[in-house]
Length: 209
Image 1 (cartoon, rainbow, N blue to C red):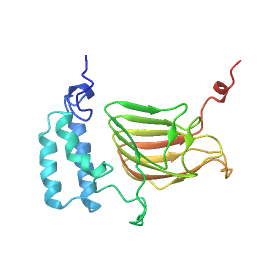
Image 2 (cartoon, rainbow, N blue to C red; image 1 turned 180 degrees about the horizontal axis):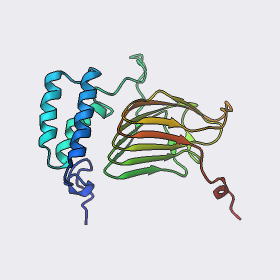
Image 3 (cartoon, rainbow, N blue to C red; image 1 turned 60 degrees about the horizontal axis):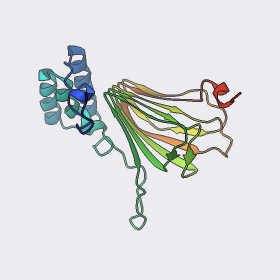
Image 4 (cartoon, helix red, strand yellow; image 1 turned 90 degrees about the horizontal axis):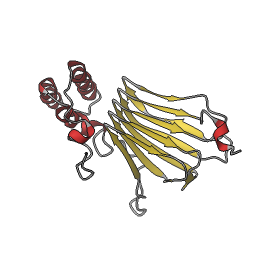
C-alpha cells in the first residue's frame, strides 16, 4: 500500500499522521527546554516551539520542532574533527530510521565515518561480519525517542562520547580490546532514547553443522 517514493521522514507511510498524545507533547517540551538550557535554542525560539508543540495534533507537527536539534546537520551536531582544509572530508555513510527500523548486517562495509539517526525508530548495526575501511571509525548517533544498537565482534575497542538527555548510552561488558579489531568512537547526542553496544548474544550461529 505505501508508496516507496513518498518522503520517508513525514506522512502516513511512516506514522507521521498518528495522533500525538499529551505525553508526546510533554516529552518534546522537555527536550526543547533542555535544548535551550544547553544553548541550542534562544528563549524566544524555545517559547515559539513550545507553543507549537502544545498545539500539535500529529507527529508530523511535532517532528519538525526537534529535528534540527538532533539531525546530523543541525546545531546539535558537533564537528567530529576540525579538518585541515587541504584534505577533503570523506563522505559519511548515513543510516536513518524514522518511525521505522533500519538494519545493517552480514557482509557490509563500515566507512570511516557513519552517522545513524533514529527518530521514533531503531537502528541496528551488526558489525560481526562487516569489513572496516579504517582501523579507527567514528559512529555519530542521534536519537530522539529511538535507539541505536551496535553489535561488535569481541576484541573491538569502543570509546563512548555520546551526550544524553533523558536517555543514555550503554556499552555493555565487552571483551578486552585486542588491538587487532577496530576501534570505534561513539559520538553524538541522544534524547529519550539510547545507544546499546554489545557482543553477539548467540555465538553458535557462526558454526554451520
